[in-house]
Length: 584
Ligand code: AGP
Image 1 (tube, rainbow, N blue to C red):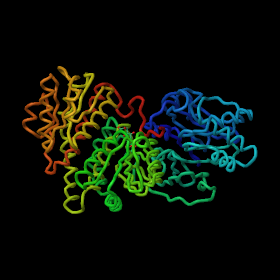
Image 2: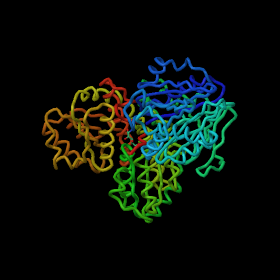
Image 3: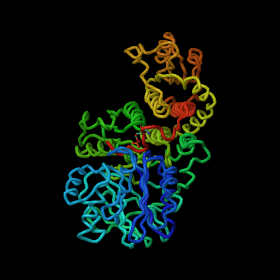
Image 4: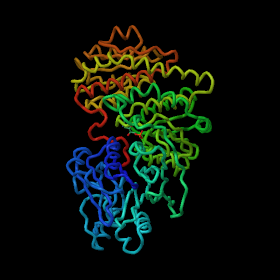
């Protein structure tokens, strides 16, 4: 997704912005730009490409000035190119603006502005906003003009804007797209999220839906959606910069896989009291999520049904409005590590429109989803930079297990999870050996039953999204209903086969594929399975069989990571993907 950052203070603004943009790179982007206010003029530099080469070629750091804004763009309207890169400048070249989100009514606004004589340089939706501000600025002072322009927008936006009038003021606005203020001494920051500002401050003010903020080196003011001055709570985060850095690992993904043994303690400490009361108060529970979070949601569905006797269903969020019929009696549990996924946000809004209560599990404090939920449980997994979700999946699972476990023995059994994770981590050399055997294969199958099936689904997603190999997961019993025809000599089948109640049946499926020449990799702690498989990766035995998903997913994350690296791919930034998908 796009990322924006703004600064006003006494530092060299081009340095602050360029550094901040580097910390936003993980959001996935294709072009980059910076604009620096210099009294009554603006120095605007932007191009298609990555931050370092563009900053070099356009000499970002040559620009002096103490107020600037910057942007990394993930294309939604218009191809990646210089003209479509942000920030955008108005016809008078004294107003500049960067935008994250989608302006849904941009075409009618653009027509009106063109009729008023405005000249456009891009095919984007975002550019209409700077010309709107310019049009309003003809009639009123900058802040009022910015507010009037914002009021005309429909859709999602995080906006940063400044007018080169010597006032050194940064105007910010947010709706359905994240924007956080960073509070410094004699300086102010604003960015899509916290890591971009961590080098300068640990005090942040997340803006609320519809908020407009005015920043100067003397501080900030916030106005709510009705234009009334508002007070917003500030938060202090303990995320040191290195937490958002790689910490000595070659990739964020490997750091975050290794982080899990620590952060899972934080997640298991989550307060689920109110959430458990909400679950207890509802018979029907709809779970909505996307991607990896959907796989965690599928685990939740199984546990709610089996452990609490609830009627629960997991839905892919983008499908939910077309296939579900929630009502006042339905509890909707939304799972989204970023708290910004548009598909999940829309599904939550649909459920709320039907009168459902909404409980959200998310990793980002004050993210958009928290603002439309009745109850929130934070994952406390720390920032996840790699596009591939790893620690946030495990943290989601930890919170889910706590949610369905009664205090006392039920929750005490969860204390075994961190050591199961650590023991799985210890298998990295065996995992690397398997990675070498499958890295050149075309199609790879994952099979599992019961709780191991959503783990197999997640293992397949991890592998395909960062290694570009085709991988699919099937419930073990499903193979014979069709997919078995794809199994031939040498096709790798990864069997998630712990010693639990489903193993006897899954063992039959392993034999099925072996008989057709498959190359079977078994994640197992069972002797017979080990003997049947071509190669096995040891699973640490779990006293409580429902806890096997934790060591299983660690192994599958490491397997995907090592295959990706063997294939010469950067697992942190897989092609075509973004960390937070804030468009539908
Ligand atoms: C997982 O590795 C992907 N990055 C993606 O499937 C992700 O899980 C999905 O987009 C949902 O994101 P969320 O949890 O932030 O809503």
